[in-house]
Length: 495
Ligand SMILES: Cc1cc2nc3c(=O)[nH]c(=O)nc-3n(C[C@H](O)[C@H](O)[C@H](O)COP(=O)(O)OP(=O)(O)OC[C@H]3O[C@@H](n4cnc5c(N)ncnc54)[C@H](O)[C@@H]3O)c2cc1C
Image 1 (cartoon, rainbow, N blue to C red):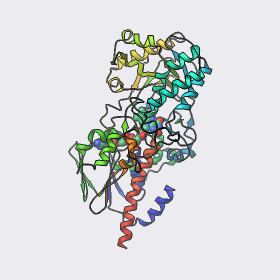
Image 2 (image 1 turned 45 degrees about the horizontal axis):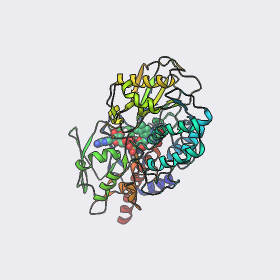
Image 3 (image 1 turned 30 degrees about the vertical axis):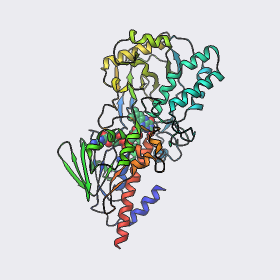
Image 4 (image 1 turned 45 degrees about the vertical axis):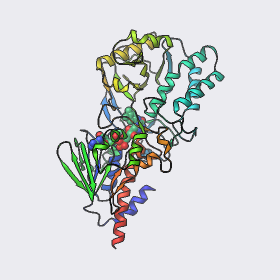
């Protein structure tokens, strides 16, 4: 549908030359906006704060393949623009993450119990808002109540003990899914929609950057050297001030100024939360400020570990960890390095490791929770020692756990150009309905002549695919098309 629309608009854009659009940010939304405009002959300048493109898509060589510091999986197939864009190229494949469970007291958790608990988790929690819950209730409130009730109905004896001890692990899964510091931050009811089909398609060791290469026509299978996107992107341009009225004036921290008729702003909700007051002149309208305040963004942390010698078996679909109460309480005295809060060591925020495609000697550790900002600041030595300590605690009786010889670590929260990983709806944000807080965030700022002058794209502006790359790409195209429609309408009025 979108493709047809762009084609139709293309016919009308004979006079569009000279219309200049600034796109702030070269993440998926910014690149999608810029490529859509460029393909219609509109002049674009993309200002990107980092020294690289991609934003929260950041694929880097590591070990034997390319790994993702940010987005890793294409979530779903039907109505997923990323899947649609690459499905004929054979670059995606299914993942198998049926993680085995390990206890800190080294009691064995059987496969049946593991799969029953997994089933219970999925019965209670799905980010997909199709499972309607009561409004005003957080995922944490809802989950704990339902989990305790259902666990007592389904399990007894030792199995029930393990199931109840696993509540922290369930919290970890929800935090990873929602990108929130706590499951009490996120709303149980939400507008999020899953795309039907396989929800964790991976890029076969080539990284999520493949999707951006396709979008930019840089991928060998769709290569078009004449498409000028690369030359339109300026790196290391941190936009500081956006003044708008009859057009936009933009100043960057390096002292450069840029002007245009329209501007599409794509930085994250985290950036908006921290910077909107100083950035926009005139200030953003109150309802948009409220949406920025009420929507949520937290952070997860990934540590990619490479080992000289692989110590885990060939057959490996991930490990998840459950601490007993006793070990949890002792941990702070047993491993003293690194941050802690309320007597809880940071190691309790590390609960799972996953395999990495085509990377037989590498593992990815997921760290979640409200200590992530502190953990992002720890030294490599503390991180390596801590992860080694925890892995040994859970798996040392089975394998000879060594320390990684190389690690890569993320700092999405500390980085001023992101201030978080992905957005979610809070109970406060859901007080706004029709338009929702996400839709309010997406509303353009129009000048007195009604010209859409500052437009907003980026994952958090999507009404139901927020938090994802496919959502971000749709929003970039949406705002590019808003400008194209405006130009078309203006031309129609003139003729
Ligand atoms: C750890 C992690 C795992 C994830 N996993 C998945 C996944 O598996 N699947 C999935 O679909 N999604 C995943 N996501 C989410 C996905 O990466 C994002 O939803 C998506 O990249 C958002 O794109 P965007 O263009 O809206 O924002 P961004 O990617 O954040 O792009 C915005 C750009 O704006 C730039 N910018 C910021 N401030 C300024 C400024 N002042 N001046 C100029 N430029 C600026 C930034 O540097 C950035 O390049 C993950 C994200 C993270 C961090």
